[in-house]
Every structure is written in structure tokens, then in C-alpha cells.
Length: 260
Ligand SMILES: [Zn+2]
Image 1 (cartoon, protein in one colour):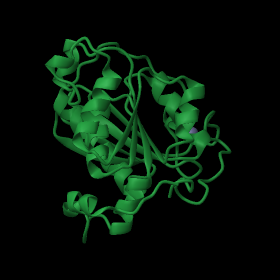
Image 2: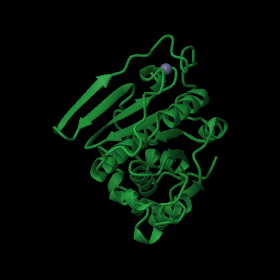
Image 3: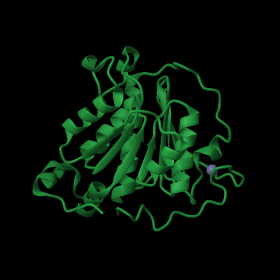
């Protein structure tokens, strides 16, 4: 376990988020001790990783392959014009490091396969799933269920999107919703403002889960219809014959006891 005592400089940095109605001192320490995986680190994952890093998560792991391209720039907050054509993961990691010297940032320059996703999930306390494809989202879901850690799934389209928070063994999982990957639309439309909103909300759920602050969106889907300015929250039902989570054991001892 890493040293989790907060230094005076950290307490000063996080002063505005420690107190009544926000985090406790112990909650901030738990954030420092935590490891969170964010994949990918694009329109949603970028702001999510940014808020986790700035909020005091001790280790943030980002995974994202390829190089930054011009159509990314309507929603990418971790890389600007000068990063065009450069590998995303190391550039994004450098941006995150510049935002908080107390955070450890790991960068993976590709999308993890099944084995690597599971390996990563076993090192983490929470997984944030922000990829565009259902194949990747379901892969991260399988990894989180197998590792017994919470999964936060964010998805976007156009001016809207969804946010789901899953707890293995207790709530539905992503594959309870999507037994098979639905058809995927390449280059779907999306406005960066909704990407950032969903990424920030995903980060907020992770911060709440790790720190113990507030009520978590466990087992529910938040749906924001930005086009019509409507919000709904629905309870998700666990599928008894789910190919992923049927029979999965309950979460052992709450969050990952290796670091908390
Ligand atoms: Zn399931």
C-alpha cells in the first residue's frame, strides 16, 4: 500500500473539496491511495482523467492508441493544436502530470485486449469505460466483473449520452443491458460539450465511490437528452442469464482492499 498521509501542500490544494457536503479528510486520503483506469482518454475519458487527476486520485492510468487528429479537437481537452499528429497517450499523460504534481500518471499507448484489461482492472479500484465501441466497453465490463471492482460506463451520441455505474455481484452489468454488441456507427456525431459533461460526471461517480462521499448511481442509468434538454434516471435490472455476470460473487469487502 502506498503512503496515504496527505502533505500540507496537498491539504492546501484540496482545501475547497474537503469539508461538510463534500469529501472528508479520510475520503481525500482514500483518493490518494486509489488507482483508477480510464480508457479511452478522448472526449469523455480526457475530461474524466483530468478531473480525477486534479481531484487527487493517486494513480490514474489512461489507455488510448493512435495519434491526435483534427476531428478530435472539438472535444479533446488533453491535447491541443501542437499535439496534432503525435501519439495521444504520452501527450495526454504529460498534460495530466502538468496539472497535478502529486498524481502518478501511467500511459498505455493502445487499447488493451482481454488479458491486459483484466490485468489492469486487478490493479485498480474503479474502471472508467469511455470507448466508442461496444466491443471495448463490454471487454472492460468483463474485466471489471472478473476483478470484482466497480465499472463506470459513459457513452455519447450527438448532444446527449448515458452514464451507468455497475457494482459486480450486486447490480446489473453492462452486458445485462447489451447481451450482444449493437451495430456500431463509425464517426458518429458528437458535440464536445456533452463529452466533457459525461466525462466529468463519470469522474464524480469514481470520486464518490473511492472517497465514500455522497450517493452513488449504483445500478442505474442516467440519460441526458441534450437535444431536448431532458434528464431521466432508470434502475437497471440484472439479467439472471447474463453471459458475463450471472453467478459472479459479490464484491469482496467493498472496494479493493489492496489499496483502501
Ligand atoms: Zn450482467
